[in-house]
Figure (cartoon, rainbow, N blue to C red):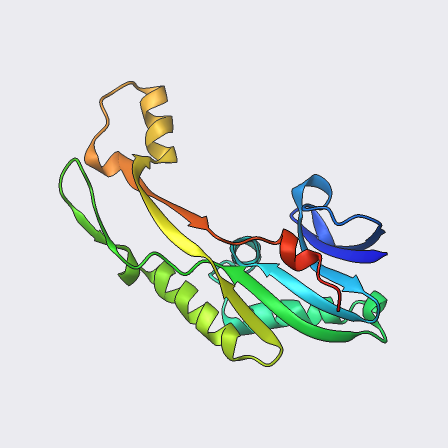
Length: 185
């Protein structure tokens, strides 16, 4: 029997017992820890955790914010008498290259953005904490796409797209939770 913990945007973290190891919790919450026997590991989906903490805090989370959330998880009564194996923080590093807008040639250095600096700082800081392991995927640039605001604007009032309507299309690749969740400690 394994125990699964997930964050859900609609309610506080929850603990359930299940015979299987699903990839998502109820209503799409991301599973963040698996308990087998008396040892457990906390699996943090970096993109999801930073998004939820950013919404809660009103700013991009610092190392101390993620650490505080992990302490909150560790204080759950269901974990009494259990020992932590480690926290695993899964995320891709920020895209560090320059992207050139195909319409006007504007060069956007994504590695110099505030968000890229904060994400890099968070990953490096978490890596230095005891009982923390940071696992990085890859960040891939897939060109440019119409941004959400531009799509809404063009739908309301049809017009030809302009250079500022396009945003970089960046995706994460290479993070696989299923293999980690099936480990036995």
